[in-house]
Length: 508
Image (tube, rainbow, N blue to C red; front, side, top):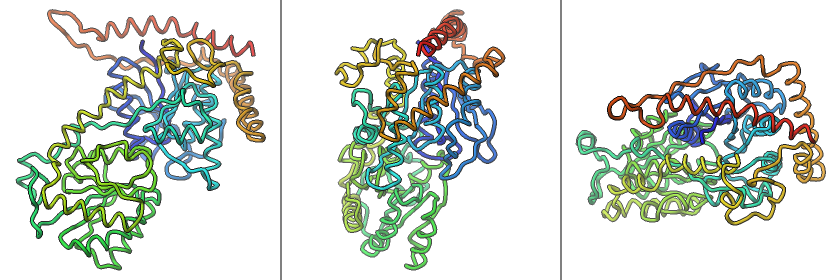
């Protein structure tokens, strides 16, 4: 059953990153499977309005003010009018938010529930429980997820973290990992290797005088372990003279890296490339032999999968969901401590020099382990579950202790009174504040329905489907004509579907 889906997050291209790549690749594969997908994000410098990407993926760049790390300023309600306009224009049925710290994601889920739309959220991060920032973030997440239909996490560690932070029933949280397009992260071919000195090729002993290149590609922020990297590099180079570092990325810690290089006179050993585009990451990685990832917290770590696919031996910290990502023969794990990172990196260098690691096999192994098509299929099943296409027993085979109020097929009720009950249980003071937000949001929705009726909003035409001929004049299943017929039949049902939701809200 095809759905009209809106992916919402502050994090999207042209900003590079794992969340951005996840949203783009998942959306593209869902479009291939017959769904309609749009993306709603904020405007970037030089990129505003509506843009079309490959495969007919439409991106709405909303003109909102960003305050920190490309996250928009939270206003709770000012996003509602334009969000409602987009949702009605595109006939959206499911709103899928990404990243728990994304303001647009949290606001979109609140507004979508008010409008009677199904919602899902993918959490890509890990947070603590002790510091003030984490406490506030966790309370915000509890507000959002207390009324979401289903939550997706990118690793089992991320799921445990999210369940504890938001006080969720584990049954309503699925684990769907990230993936990579392995063809975009190929090792050097024999032709390319012949033109590049010291390029990693078939497994062989590297002589003691041959240079080993260690690659680091990361946002240069504290949580990515840049302080550990700064402390470790001089010690690694002191014990391994025939090693050099290639570092790409930008962030507030870039100045600290530059100062370390100046202080230790390592200009010939450490090369800073600055920010690189995502399509250039492979060209940087294949120049190395080892990928170093000293992160302090990580829910998944897509970049280490990309590095392994490029044929690099991975040295990473044993934190968060990283141990779940790659098998042990592709990685060396270190504690998030300076001494251990230095020791483990030295051990990886020795293994490469002795030819004990078959990095030439990594690409095909990663290609078999991770696939965006598989991620799209599993995400589609979540959509089937929250839309009622799957029965309660099919979607929640293990039951669910806290799902008694979900009703038919285990989906949440849209009735305002039921939503207020869920919000009220979020805390003594926070619960009352959340209820107030939900009531104001509902009143704003009624106001918009009266003074900006949806009948005045034009419906967008869909991106034309590709017509693939099969045999003599026969169109392959899923062609433009079939898609048009299916979409037409779906459009007849949608107004009735929305009317039922509004009636259910009215009963409250």
